[in-house]
Image 1: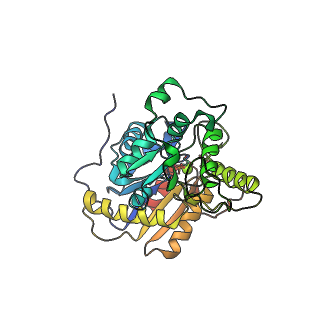
Image 2 (image 1 turned 180 degrees about the horizontal axis):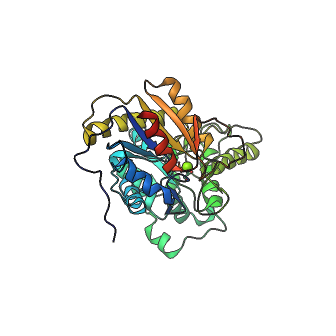
Image 3 (image 1 turned 45 degrees about the vertical axis):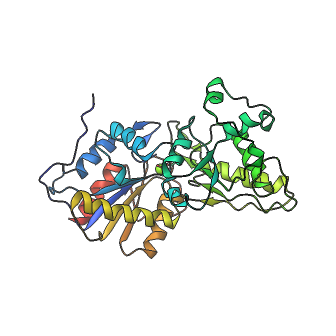
Length: 348
Ligand code: G3P
Ligand code: MG
């Protein structure tokens, strides 16, 4: 049984600085906490020599579940209570597009999870690749739906008459071939209608990815292919099958600036509601393992931001010691515990 540790009551909150954490490769790998992460969280929650609680949020490119479910997972892994009010995942900003698109295709994740996330955000008509394969099994010649998938997938209307207005890749694909085929079909369609073929290949629905990480840090010793690799594959396939047309897709997540703006708003609210601090922090320490998303995003956002966003790179994930990071962090430390100590010592 796990008794989550909550911040020590009665301690003052540090009001001039805060922390923001990447998750995979910093706090967690392959579903297990990185050992130093548990100590790091305790330190922020008041077990430090300065006798303060420090506000912090999480900013991951991962996803595939509701924010509330992901927070429960992370609370168990790190042995603390984590609130959705301090958590952003790759697809969180997609909730701001529910009014812009009617019928959408949602790709990725386990089973029906991402459909549920999308509907929870307020998307009114969510179709999955499973619905399309159920509607026409010839769509993917070598991919047959399991009995469970057949039961969950929705049918009952003629999908060839439905205009799919946008595609959202919410989480990593569990079936790259099938999902690529279906996204290509729509990208090459006349205005988002399945079964049609455009003459100009420029009238398909917009395609949004929840992030663009080429690789990420999971349980394996070496990095694993991520959603950015699927994105690259789709764009390359489109160029090849259309004999040279470009497919412009859109990525959310880090290193995109709007994601850091979203994080700034969340952090401000979290400091106000949880720590009763009503002013922006002077410094936000962002702790990440991937130079291309974490460090790049933090450094670029720092040029626009009224707060100092300070990038710290750890050695427990994607970046390998001895190589030159593509984007240079302001500090490099062994692990997340050292990152927290670094920030605290720099402040006091
Ligand atoms: O799929 C998740 C991965 O690409 C990155 O997650 O927590 O390192 O941003 P994170
Ligand atoms: Mg990471």
